[in-house]
Amino acid sequence: KQEVTQIPAALSVPEGENLVLNCSFTDSAIYNLQWFRQDPGKGLTSLLLIQSSQREQTSGRLNASLDKSSGRSTLYIAASQPGDSATYLCAVMEYGNKLVFGAGTILRVKS
Amino acid sequence: NAGVTQTPKFQVLKTGQSMTLQCAQDMNHEYMSWYRQDPGMGLRLIHYSVGAGITDQGEVPNGYNVSRSTTEDFPLRLLSAAPSQTSVYFCASRLQGMNTGELFFGEGSRLTVL
Image 1: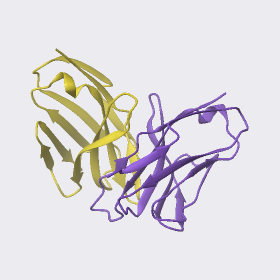
Image 2: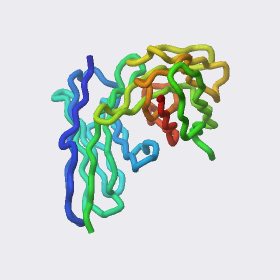
Image 3: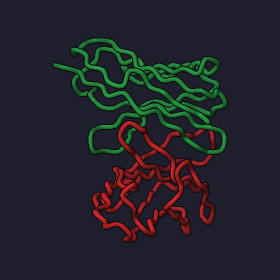
């Protein structure tokens, strides 16, 4: 059974820092990996989608990498801002049309 | 562009009552799904559908029914609510092809079962 783990569970950093969120998964037979952002009381917003054949994707200050063979992905956030405060979730798309989520990392960026 | 719309946003039920959570999308997505989100457990897949007339079970299907009579709508039914079904429910949709996997979520429905 696929398991997705996110480390750390919570992170608090001062504004302006670069930071890395980690995601690991146990079964490398995936179609893609997706990073989401969730604000309190809201739904999930897709940030980056990495296909299994890709190594990384970039959007603005966000960069996500994927190492399928080792079962790891990282989300790099450059020059963090208070508006980046949210919960970040990663999810892998398995064969069989199922998306398996990690429990998330709660990020707080202090001004 | 409304995206994925869920109703109601909040609901309180008594044990044994039934209700339906509604989900509609206007993006012509073939794939629709329901997740529940519980503290410390991430999101878990309840049921999903790859097109009208086709549904399948996810990780935690017990206590929930679904149907897909149109491309746009994917309601989730609780036939006899239990306190263990207290959760936040999310509907999500995407295009069906595996290489177009970006998932779009609704705002969620917060359900409390007393």
